[in-house]
Length: 280
Ligand SMILES: Cc1ncc(C[n+]2csc(CCOP(=O)(O)OP(=O)(O)O)c2C)c(N)n1
Ligand code: SF4
Ligand SMILES: [Mg+2]
Image 1 (tube, rainbow, N blue to C red):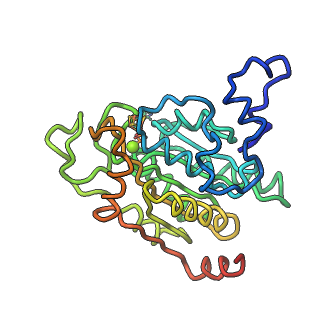
Image 2 (image 1 turned 120 degrees about the vertical axis):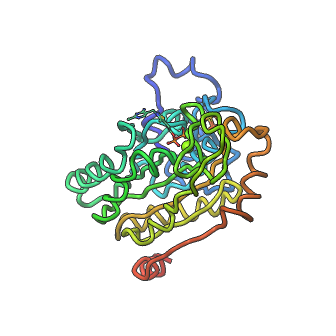
Image 3 (image 1 turned 30 degrees about the horizontal axis):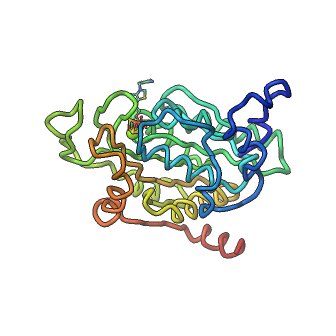
């Protein structure tokens, strides 16, 4: 979170809502408070336009709270429900044409390295399953093959949420959706496994039902991308609106998924392991 981004000009300072003023005055800027303090501050400014119970909104909050150097982080997004909330965080955030996120992130990371050779500038792609696994798959894979030092985080709600419920490559086989009324014919794409053999030095699969794990894996992914190469975190962020479950069941659904098709998994390459040991 960056206080600079959200601090208004003086003339507006006293007419902003109380929540906003609280964020500016007491927000956890530049302090690693950790995920346990998630309830005590707002990473998403004021009210956000996600549906009630949105797993993607929770995923964004968890990622925002886990960033090791938020003021020196550039988040790259693309169309999809994730940009509703992302546009309302106190983070450096840039959107791209749908699917282009890993190409844009690669270029920006290289540029930032030239412009700030002595400083860490973390570039993090934070995008939906359709953006990564379908329309942006080629650019995602090529950024991994090239060894770009960026982190890719998928908020996987297993559907195109933003456009009303088309199936995505990440939808489960048989899943009935508004625009897949007979159920999806093909299995979920193994992007997590593909990441491991495509150049990622670190990969993890987590759900929003395990917030501390989300925090740990995101942190590791970003720290490792700084020094070694591409990293990937896939977060299950179920969508009540399109998967048609009550909005107060999001965590329950994610917990159940951990015991079924979304078990926790972490891949750490040997060089990443050495680096993490040194950091510790
Ligand atoms: C080139 C292009 N194709 C299609 C679209 C329409 N579009 C916007 S968001 C979206 C689906 C997003 O799905 P996903 O990435 O899973 O994100 P979610 O909304 O589920 O979070 C589509 C198809 C677009 N904006 N640009
Ligand atoms: S459609 Fe789904 S993913 Fe999109 S905002 Fe609503 S609950 Fe969240
Ligand atoms: Mg999606």
